[in-house]
Image 1: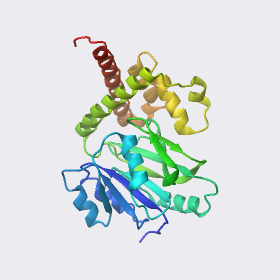
Image 2: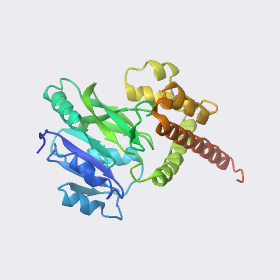
Image 3: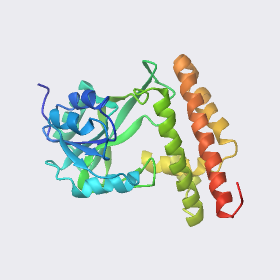
Length: 281
C-alpha cells in the first residue's frame, strides 16, 4: 500500500470506463477519491464505485461552471485537493513530491505540477504546449474562468511541486481525439467571439513577463488569437521553435494535429461572425 496523504482527489469523467481503472489505481495515496461524472452512459460509474471512489453525477455545461460547482458542493474530506483526468496517471515521484510539499506548505494555496504527454508510446518531451499545471490546491481557494480550457484563479501564492504525472490523451485512439477537439474548437471559437464582443482586455507585456504561469498563458492566448496565419504559426512554434522535430514521428504528428485544431477554431470564429451579421452561409 503506497503512502497515504491528507489529500482529497477529484477525477472528472464522461464515458471513461476504459481509462478510469488505471487512473484510480494510481490514486491509492488518498482515502478520499471522488469521481465527478457528467452522466456517462457506459460503465464509468460502476467501475468507480467498485474501486472505492465516491461518485457525484451532474450534467456538463461549461468547464469553468462545472469545476466551480465541484469546488463548492462536493464534500471533500481534506482542505487540499488533487485534480485528475481519467487519462492521467500519478507517478511515485509525484506522490513523494506532494508529501514533501504538504509537509511544509507555508503560505502556498496551490502547487504547479509537471505533466508528461504521450503519443505513440513516446513522451512528447519537447512538443507539448503547456507541460505545467496547477493540480494540487486548497479547494476553497480555487476558482476557474473561461468556457473551455479554463484558467485557474488561486486566492493565494502558488508554489512548485516535485515529480510529475503522465498524460495519455490518445489512449482512446486518434478518432476520439479528433472528435473531442472538434467539440473543443467550437467552444474555443465561442470564447473568442465572446471576448471580442465584450472587449476583454489583455496585455502584450504580461504575455511575456507575468510571473504567474496561468495568467501569462491567458494573455498569450489572447495575443495568439489576434495573430494572422495562426495554424501555420502554431505548427512552427511546436515543431520548430520548441524542438518538436526532435520527438520524431510523434512530434510531427502532434504538431500537425494541433495546427489543424487551430485552423478549425479560425474557421468556426469566421462562421460565427458571419452568422451574427446575417450572412447566409
